[in-house]
Image (cartoon, rainbow, N blue to C red):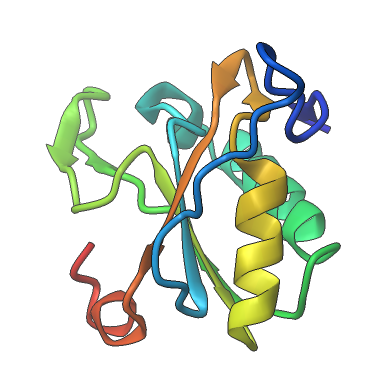
Length: 130
């Protein structure tokens, strides 16, 4: 698995409590988790999607998962880069699952990067406005 490390851990003064992620929705946004180069290769992309789905499934029922990726020209250069590249969007069946996953995954390491979490309104996710 690409996800490593434990949630929480905050140093200083007896394990500081992390601030809430904001008003919860059913859609969790994971930032700083993937980079464009990792999305280019189809098998690597599939592995990332499966890994994230499996990890998030520990916290609640995953309804859908979007990992936006660019389309490429024949020479390998980026053709179209959609909104949300480099971010992962996970839709849960209920807010509680999204919150549990967000609290567990934020500040975790994914391929050497620190994951940041937030929420996206369900209607924005459905419309692709992220």
